[in-house]
Image 1 (cartoon, rainbow, N blue to C red):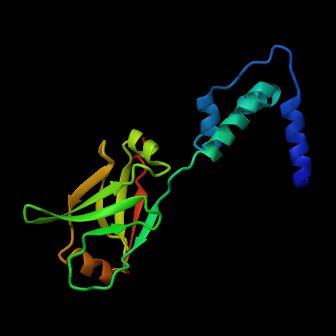
Image 2 (image 1 turned 180 degrees about the vertical axis):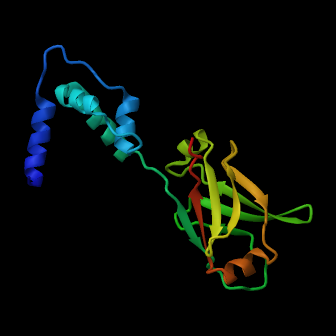
Image 3 (image 1 turned 135 degrees about the vertical axis):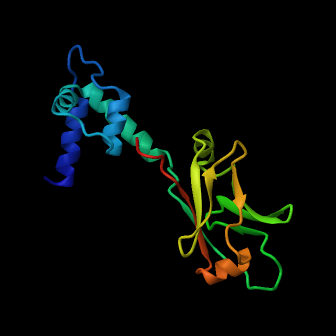
Length: 183
C-alpha cells in the first residue's frame, strides 16, 4: 500500500458517518495507545474501527501530541578558557537551563535554574519534573525535583572545582528528565 493509498483510506474512514455513533473509548485509553504504554485490546480495536467519531477523536489527540513540544533534554559545553577565575554560570545550548555555582556558607553548591520563558517550562513546573544534571562522563552533578521557582539545588559533589571538573570530564554536561519510578 502506498502512502497515498494510506491517506485516502484514512480520509475515507474519518469522513464516513454512522447513525447513533458516539465515543466508544475514553481519552485515557486512546492516549495510552498513542504513547505505547498500553496496546488496544481486540475489542477496543474493533470499537475504534466501527466508530468514525472515536477515530476522529484519536486523530485529534495524536495531532495535539505532535503540536505540544515535549522536552527530552538539553546539553551544554564549558566554552570559556580557564582564566583562573571561578566558574559562576553555565548555560545549556538551547538556553533553557542555567547552572549557578554558589558558595553556601563555605560549602560549594550548584543551583539548576529553568528559564521560565522556555517552551516547555509551564509543563515542567506543573509536573514538578525531576531532573538530573550529568557531566560529560555521566557523573551526577545534581538530581531532584523542580521547586515552584523552577530550581533544583544541591551540594557540589566533586573534590575538584566546577571549572576543573568539567575540563577533566569532556567539558560537557546535560540536563535530562528523570522518569518516574515504575509502579
